[in-house]
Amino acid sequence: MKALEFMILGAQKSATTALSEFLNEHPMIEMAQGKEAHIFDDAKFNNEWFSGEIERRYDSLFDNPDASIKGEATPVYLYFPEIAERLRRYNPELKLIVILRDPVERAYSHYLMEKKRGNESLPFCLALLIESYRLHRDREYLSEDSSLRRHSYRDRGYYFRQLNNLFRSFEKDQVLVIQSEWLRERHEETLRQVHDFLDIDEFPTQSREVFSQSSNLSDVPMASLFLRRCFRKDLVKLEELVEFSTADWR
Image 1 (cartoon, rainbow, N blue to C red):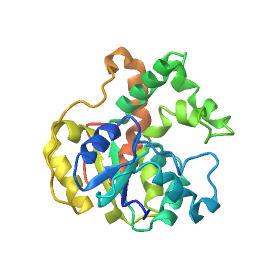
Image 2: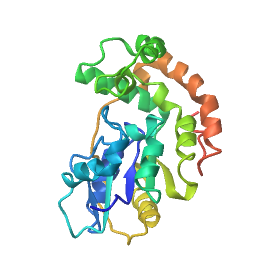
Image 3: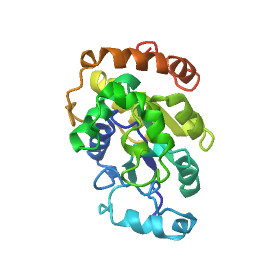
């Protein structure tokens, strides 16, 4: 099959599932089955995959020959720095959609997800305090149980670093950056923006909650204050790369 036309890169816990489902309803689009393909972050990935292995794996994830545009959504692609160059080599014309969420809310939602899955037993504050140690000791970071996948609550919120890395491999007009809040509060307008970016006709979809997990920052006031201070400078720098203000997140 031909190369995918677009991908949703994250950030994790930022409504990537919702956007993927909304786009999959468009008659011109087919999203990869199972949403997260995890091809380019596979621990066994190597340069030989560009000779056919990538296409073989994607073949098993698509079955609609009438769809003119194919895409996938794997949030961790934004986080691992080597993925951007792999994607550029796969398709230099690839269009990338990045959804960002208030990094403090994202971090706590990530923590609650890992706790629910049984991958986290520490209180949120303690998990944040030892996060750097966990990530530093992680030698097999591409493995499914690595701390960079499971325990990177704060680290994944440094969006400037991740986007700056992405723009080293792709031109800015190939990347659309939106806020997850827009998808919820300005649903039609945001989807119209995505459709324009993908150069396809507008197709209305019903706004709805695709995935909901209760996460109230008032439950963790000290951790929230700590994270606000951690992210403040990064969010100011982020405004150099995006076309919206990050003041509400600061």
